[in-house]
Image 1: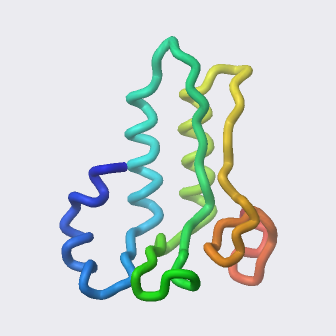
Image 2: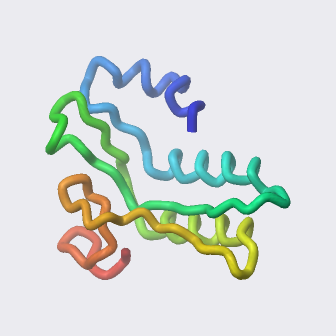
Length: 113
């Protein structure tokens, strides 16, 4: 995930808080980085369904843009391929309505998450 902060997108948007990054880019990076941990050691993979903490941090917050069910689904499918059959798989959705991180139906996404 470190490469996201080195990206030119960060430098372009840093003065226009909040920090915005496309969800697709985060998920693609998550999958790429997770493949580095495909070893004999026990590793539990996981994903999440979005992030937006601007309601708590205002212009100093960060938001993942264009969050969609297809990229969320892609992350589950690709990361489950890396997991062993009996492994746990984590989905980070703490019912954080303030951060847009929840797996419950809502007006924006309906039942997609």
